[in-house]
Image (tube, one colour):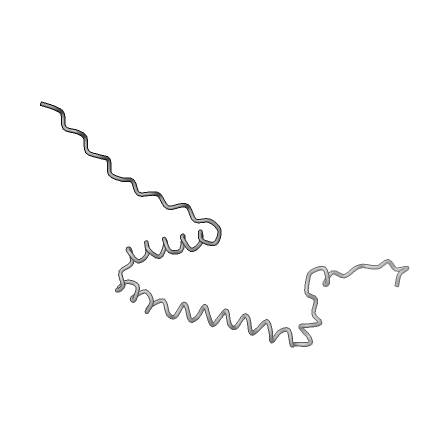
Length: 99
C-alpha cells in the first residue's frame, strides 16, 4: 500500500505592517476601543454613567472656576502690583552708609 500524500499546508495570511507616524495613535485607540467594546456590557456602562455624573460636573465646574478666576484676578489692580515670585519679595539689606 502506498503512503497517502500529505495535505498542503494552509495558506498563511500576511501579517499587517506595523503602523507608523500618526497611524500609531489611531491603531492604539482603535485596538483599545475594540477591547472595551468586547468587555464592557451596556447595562454596566449606563449604570456607571448615571452615578458618575456628579463628579464629572463638579470637576468641570472647578475647572471653569479656575479659568475664570485667573482672568478676574488679572483685572484687579492690587493683585497686578503684587509680587509674582519669591525673588521680588526678597528685601535687600543695605549698609548704614547707603542710607
